[in-house]
Amino acid sequence: MNHDAALRKQLVKLLESGEAHAEFEDAIADFPAELRGKRPKGSPHSPWELLEHMRIAQWDILEFGRDAKHQSPKFPDGYWPASPEPPSAEAWEKSVKAFLADRKALARLVEDASADLFARIPHGSGQTLLREALLTADHNAYHLGQLVLLRKIMGAWPSA
Image (tube, rainbow, N blue to C red; front, top):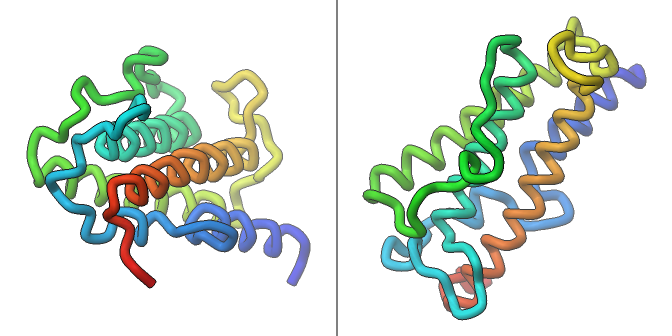
């Protein structure tokens, strides 16, 4: 396997699997509906806020990378939901599905051998596809850790 293919494979693994930490799918699996909008004492965010923030940020990074006309949300408020509670169970499920779909779309961009990982994104200010993939993985891992911690604090982390 050449270096380019090996790098792409590792980037996809970084985006899609936990490797050194819990996986997104495990963190949100069977998340109790009654806890999704709760902020445990001392926490500035609820699970819903973290999920939506992860979804919005990942979507923004993906769209920036593939659409020169994309307009990012206003920072920081546009990257967080308006309420700690999801408006409905369907909103939670829709957010999860959108996060997974966008993560897969970003992974497909990274896997595309015709996409130069090191080329500057023409409408950016020096960003590359490599940088955007690493930024997404880093951001997702950070907030995924918070989500897992909230779930543990709430007593809702599945037993091994």
